[in-house]
Length: 246
Image 1: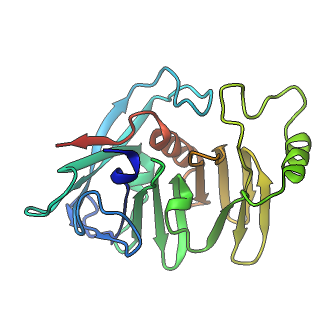
Image 2: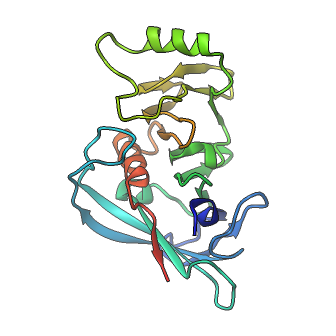
Image 3: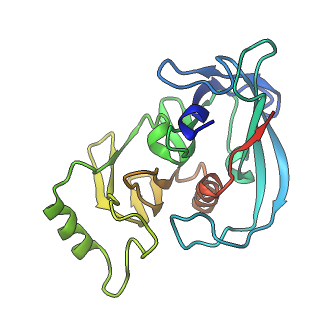
């Protein structure tokens, strides 16, 4: 099975209690690796030891994290490509979930995993390949429509002297990204960094490129910690982040 066939996009409303298994629904535009209505359960995954490179797309070392596991299980009788899949986020992100929140989870056709949490019509957090999930009160855009001259200028102006971005092993066709709030406040184009947009802390761990997704954390101050978001984004971007069962 290729990566495009392993894509999925699901949405659901968080139940009470949050740890109970509950049904999520495939979005109208998304692929459904586990059928139209799998169940989702969130469980404690304990301490996940780090070490070694996070992914081929950055030089970050995989962190040690106290994690929570999100496990999607196909409904009985559905004709599906996998019986279940599982991935990890930082436990503090899972603990931020409240009954009534809307949860979006997705895997893009290029393999990027993402999670977003919406509460009362406003983004609480989004991590991973955030272009694959609903962000509601924040707009994210990959600036892949810029001219080569503009890209060259941005790379020259935005990348500190002596720092190679992307590094020699990174794909050449890398694009900056930008974020826009409801108020029209704008951040970007940027390639990476720790920034703030109104009430949101934004960490661009690495940006989008021609054949792959971005790795980004967007967290709303006072609701989800910046570190929990960044660690969750890194877990979702790690090699082998999606565990296929059956």
